[in-house]
Picture (cartoon, helix red, strand yellow):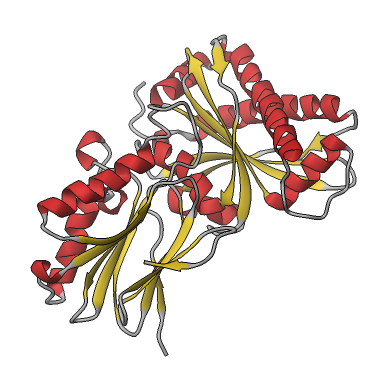
Length: 161
Length: 204
C-alpha cells in the first residue's frame, strides 16, 4: 500500500515511490517539488513568503522560499540524492484578490513564484513544469513513481504537469 | 511597548481585543439587521489565536469551498480585514438579501454584489466601532470577493500574519436570524505597528 504524505502550510517533507506527497489549497503560497527521476525520490515545500532576510522573525525556515529550499535540498542530499540530478516542478503563487496593480498584497503570489525561479537558478536546478500565477487556488500532489504532478482546482479539470 | 509578534499579546490585552471584537461584531449584526429588515442576533464572538497552518481547519479544512471578503484599511491604523464564511452560509446570506430561495451553489452576479454589499456593511460597522473606541481615523477600501478553497483564500491573511509570526488573530462570529445560522469568521490583520497603537490607546 502506498501512502500519501501531507505537507502543511510553511512545511516541507520528502517522499519515495510508491508513496505520493501533497499539499492542499495552495493560494498565494507556492508549492515546489524537487525530484530525482532515477532514484524516484522527491521533496515538497509549501512556502508562504519569498525572502527570509526581509523578515525579522525568520526562524521558521519552511515558511520562506530561500531557507525552505535550502533545507529541502539538504534533506534530499542526506538521502543520497545529488543536487545535479534534481529537477523541479512548481505550482501556486496565485493572486487571490485582485487589487489595483502594484499593491503589495496582490503581488505576493507573483513574488513567491519569482523567488523560486531565481533561487533554483542559483542552485542550477531546472524547472521542467510550472503552473503558477492566475487567480485560483490549487491542491497539488506529486507521484515520484512516474514524475507526474497533479493539479486540482475548484470548477476546473484535473491537470497533470 | 513594542510587540515583536502577535504571540507576545498578553491575557489582559486579549480581553480588550475580545471586547473590541464583541462591540465590532455587535455593530455588524445591527447593521445587518437593518439591511435585512429582520432581527439578526449574534453569539458572543470567540477571539482566538490560531496557528497559521491550522487557520483553514476551523472553517472546514483547506479544501472547503468558502467565500472571502477582503477589505484593506488605511489611515492611522493600517491593515486588512477578512470576513470568511462557508459557501453554504454565503448562499443563505445572499438569499436573505435578495429575498430568494436558491439551492444552487452557483453565485450569479446579483449574489456577488449582494455579498459585497454585506461585506461592506459589516466590515464598515466593525471598523467604525474600532475607530470610535480608539479615536483613530480608519479609511476602508472597497471590498474584494473571492470564491475558492479555504486554504487558498486564507493564505492571503496568513501571509500577512506570517510576516511577523506563526499565529493569526481570529474572531469567530455566528449570526442567527432565528431560522438559519450563518457562521462567519472575522480575521483582523492590522499591521503590528497599528496593533501597538490600538493596545496603547486602550490603555493596557
